[in-house]
View 1: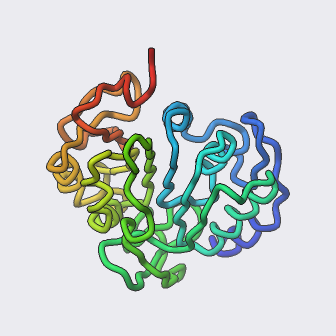
View 2: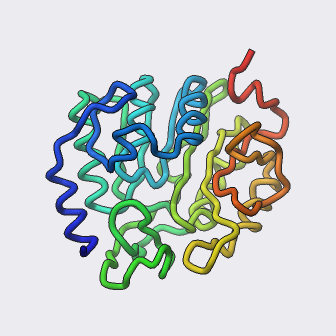
Length: 254
């Protein structure tokens, strides 16, 4: 079935109650509580320590819902129009709106415009990513993340979740003021460093090097959150935080 028809049909679905206590129009794994279980647990734990949440590549607002449920100020960037409409629906059906800013844009290295391929989950600015066809190309505006999100104030805890399907290196190149902030944000970034062709980021190592040079430590976003020296086979999500802080400082564990 054509992905554009699927996206149109998604807009007409009725939001359902999730196991997390909020309503959502999304795929069955999100509404049923089985979507990205490891990442979901980690994000919920990090949000408990956060004063501000930035979701780059917010899709339908899955993680924004958790932030809003925890009353965390949120900025969501999502360039795909059909995703934005569902994200807004998911906020409104729960009575949220005052603590979230939705920006229908992509994050990149320079302001302007860029082509996005695909609709829904898996849409990417990388041509051929996840086998998204040329027929589902759309042109969207691009902003530099540090032009629309101010660095954390002293004492403010900021969490930035970035899931941009292979475009993370370029998105981070436009976030230098945030990466280099004196009070460093905590970053949870999807980086596909190993895989075949359509799901491989050729800038994975450069992404890690950029964060290391700015004073971050990297951890696998799974299991015991072990420190890593770069991208690892089978791992796609990584936690970056100030190298001067202990994991307990980031998660708030006693």
